[in-house]
Length: 243
Figure 1: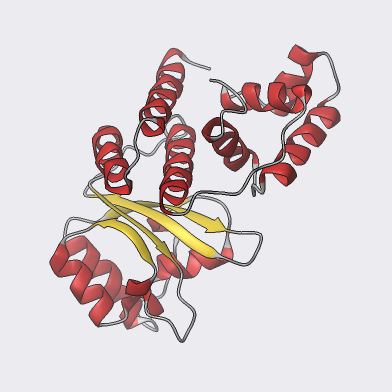
Figure 2 (figure 1 turned 90 degrees about the vertical axis):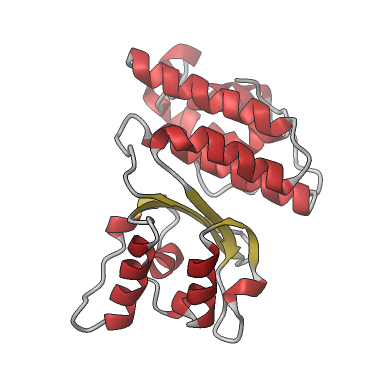
């Protein structure tokens, strides 16, 4: 990793350590505002994704949105046309809002949503989809007028966003006891947290890349995580590994 990439990793771990000291969900949002501002983020929303018979405002856990835009968005049921929410349902990978494609000619309401957000300074965004093993769907969506989203910043932003979501959920609904990890699973997650690939970790630990992949998969299963980054976030949150 480059020197600046290491700095981003340190920033992410410093943010995680700060969240561990917080006991109120709004305090987490305040910490997110401070820490994510360096990447250009100004607004956040943490919400479940509504079924056809649900209103999105009943599923919002926390938000820092311009109130006028929030009232407009919920009042006009923009979530039914929002291309960002549509892509959230289709992927487990974080994405930029620009990746949520739509055709303005055939989807004028989608264009209305995105243009409306832009009018309130939410011109660019980054979204973290959450798909629970029990079918639960949610997202953490962040935005700003101009974002610093690069291959160097995105891994840190992904980890920070995932941990923030987990911390908010923990505060609002404390989780059940999780299964302990083996020593090798913890070690593999520690190296993953440090930005090492499965190949890098296999060399460090003196095993095959396939073995590392199996350790990560086992850790994901035990922690109810959807991917490696999610597993790292949960392991850090429950003090199963240390940065």
